[in-house]
Length: 141
Image (cartoon, rainbow, N blue to C red; front, top):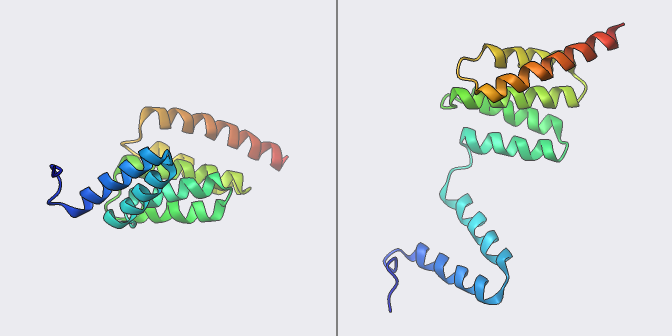
């Protein structure tokens, strides 16, 4: 019996790999294949993908790599404004984590000036800004 998607060879391949992964109880094969496929189908140079690459670098404590990725995502012309705000916020966190409180404060203030910043991001920004400024004053005295 032919699959409903048999005229699309890539989908048929996905069904085969999914079947093998389920029957062999090795879900890792299926997940790895899907990750590989997504990397081939969707472009890697989108603001969304670069932003998420920055998040992964920040999780690995690669602060400079995360800062670079967030900056790239912010500067791309097709980045939505809400994502710019989130990238600025995360870049501020990376700056503060790497010890550069002044750049972190500048980014946090930029988040507050951005029009389409989600409410939860603005709230977290105000809280982080207050803590960072207090820490910077404490370090100056």
